[in-house]
Length: 405
Image (cartoon, rainbow, N blue to C red; front, top):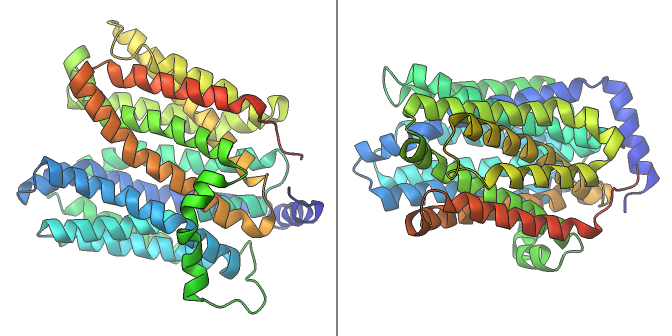
């Protein structure tokens, strides 16, 4: 469990920076995810123009999460030894390079390389969470994790809209804009983002020690004392990823929405997540605690998922989407905060990296399971199955309690 000393150090950092570092980190993650949101909706169209079929598109989409799964624990361990700031900056620079490769891509191989680079760079998400852990203490930890989640939600909402405006000229225009935006964010972080975790004395980049977390990943995921929390994070993300993969097919088929309507519904879902993670979590956690808020969020996620595709009313669909988005918005930062507050300061990056790998695995398997379930059992099936997965997550949370403040 965390000692008193690291929490005092976090409180000192908070007092010294006046919260400025959290604002800078929010902008850093937001701009990076804005670039991601600009590009990803155009990936299937971009690939089809190069003659890449459905299987190839699926591989291109999956390699992002696969590389994130591999890179997250490695980069987390590097950030524990070398500091958070250089790893976050490396991720931004790598994302910018990935976009440039994407923009010049002319074959399936080059698309795969671009998405692999970007996925590995996205492994720094756990480092951003570790940065929050370094700079917050007590109940502020969940609020800080919520800021990261809100940055994700807003990036996904605004990115596709901005990409749609830029995409009228060329499918490559949004990609190069994302590259420029992310590189500008890299410069911004270099100038304004302070270090939150000084390097270990005499630390150097030893390849053997860097790769060790990857070799230990199966054991970390399967035998770690935080296994219960990893399972909860995996199951709820698995269910949500299945929804993300099938919603754009289900909404037109069952409810008759066009592309603009689907985009509006997804934007609404993203805004609800951002509201929950960026504002409501910080207000609610001091009163109910992270463990209880996690359970509330999981119940809401279940209640929102179950009726989708089955109810005929458009207003009922909107209500269900809002409930599940708020639920995921409550649960996601709560579980990340519980994990962070249950480990020692010097292992924040590595353990949050293991958690990020669990989430990446869920984002690989969730869309596959959702697609198969959709094809075999009908449009409503992925959401009922997702609700069952979240019910399992609720059962796993039984013994979880809040970490000491």
